[in-house]
Image (cartoon, rainbow, N blue to C red; front, side):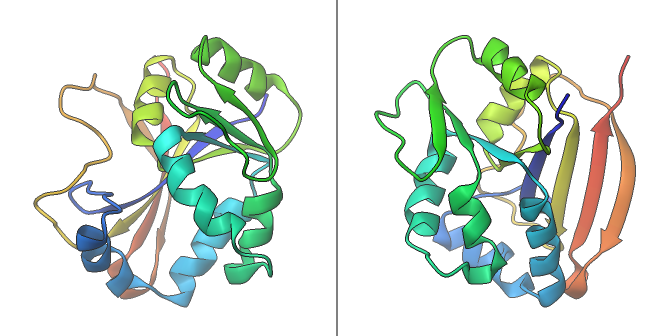
Length: 188
């Protein structure tokens, strides 16, 4: 069975807001070759992408416009199979998008996990991740934590979520104070 791995880039207080007002403050100043290599390793290791509609709408126009494997990622982003969970997305025409999952989401994702191949990567997609957490479908979390407390902005985990215990399986210091933290859910 394939694993589902969540990849999220967050500020220390969990802000992952991609709005330029926030992104330029918490993400851009911590750019480094080591951070780029970490991101590249995670993306290149996956066999498919799973994302929510908002993430798809953000990533598709950017990556589909890149044709020369920019950042060492464009080739993978454009060629890997993609599954999108959305009730509002009308069409998904980014290269190799397999389908839009509108109904029976948990059941459909369980089927995708059963297919052969490398892990399924969820880039961002906090709302989708939260629904999959409740169904116990997340196998690993990979957070790039940036050393800044934003104090406001969209947070990856919302207030009121059920408590979820995790086991730290790996840490990796990255340049400029960024840390890569890898967790697996603790099974009861």
